[in-house]
Image (cartoon, rainbow, N blue to C red; front, side, top):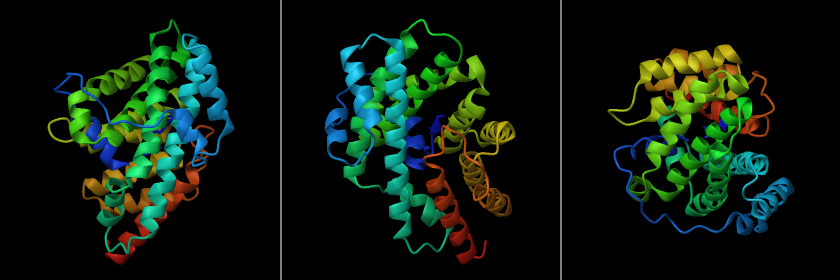
Length: 286
């Protein structure tokens, strides 16, 4: 998280990061999209992870235990991120891409069924992460709790869509959690807070978008460790900045970069998405 695919691309995609930054001005509460509880999502078999079921059950039984809450937030983010990455690849494989933009645009168009599953997981994950953030945790545990809170809330915002998320005021909470994680330890988990904020600043709308700051943060993340997700995100940023050659160089590095424990499950999907970007770049003559 990052855990970030955090991340979160994700692991965490372009749209949820854009949306998550559009809500800063408003903090008024509003009803969120109705989503199935995490328990119901897990029963569908779409998410095949017994750890999730055990973690959610433990959290329901001990909702004030920060260690239980942190473990629940951790495994639910892994499940939500895996769900998104699988869907991204499945959608991208169906696109006869003629440009990199076509591949990147797939991330805006995932089916409602995927969003509902992710929302069910992320709602409970954010609840658990907030318990951990509010508890008297210290050190790495507190950094992780803030990263996970930002990641889950970003998924909630993405799944709810722009209007509901705008009215619910998720943006302030997302930004506060990211800032706290960076303040505590920007290098935690091989630079997860760096890539989380870097991706955020890359995809944010004006006036929050700051691709110069994003470039600095993502380069620092790569320096911390050359993870597939770091190269993928840096390549996407360079593409957005018009540096096609630099983007291609970073996407090529995704194939041979070694994932860490946090991102290992989603790394194959990051590699496939990088390959699809490269295929599109070759097809468009970039």
